[in-house]
Length: 149
Image (cartoon, rainbow, N blue to C red; front, side, top):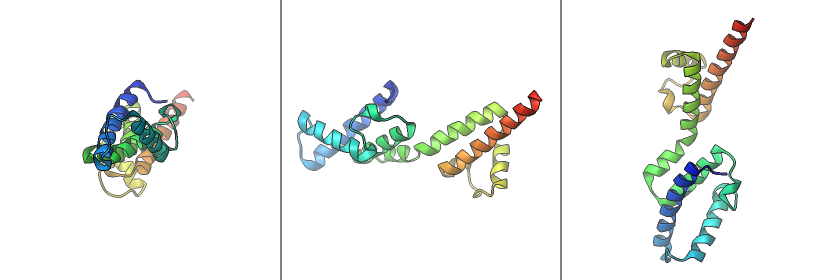
């Protein structure tokens, strides 16, 4: 189920997508029946659900928003939602950096040791950013275990 904040974000995308659809299909944007049918069909097409109450994960929310951003045709929104998995992974990585007291130089060192491509961490795919976060997490847990011993 979407949070209130997520509902607000999604509803803006939904309205933009509906207006774009109506323009292309020469439909009346005030037609509630047409809007409801279109909306339900697009929910199923995007994440395979009939109502947003069935969306349980951040990944589902991201896919939903990317789908409706694409329907809206707004490139800025499409770009934003395309990078959502990377943004979430970066957030987790930054949380682990804060917990461990490690800086970006340390993270880049780990990336080099893991033979990651030589580019900015922000430009890596989500899977690789998550691997860095996991490496920091495991290092933190090892240090905590050592401190307890």
